[in-house]
Length: 124
Image (cartoon, rainbow, N blue to C red; front, side):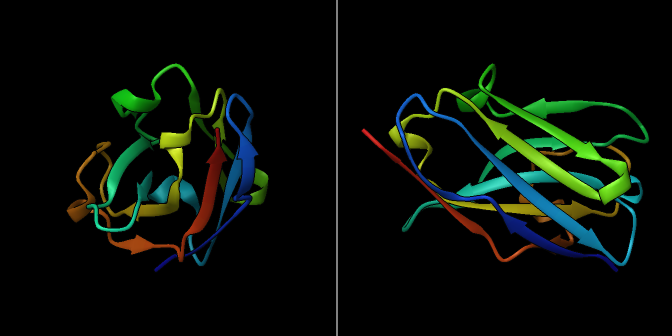
């Protein structure tokens, strides 16, 4: 199995940028479909982005399309979420996740492993 640890969250002003990292250990990222989700208090965990670099393909949730980019560094076995043009509504705890499947998916129930989350706060 794989262990996931997120970092890179923090406080940023609206319009700014942050890059989240998700370090994977135990297995290589290529073995999984990877995803980013976010959650605010009282709401369900929301899909942000997904990618599978072996099979090919990325997909983004509508609220972040054109602003966020999912990527990876093979040598570091690390996935990233570059977040640009941040808005106050992007404030949430962000989680990375891994799914034992080759097809990308937006469904959180399809993901088998989760990190502990990192807080992102965007001030207006």
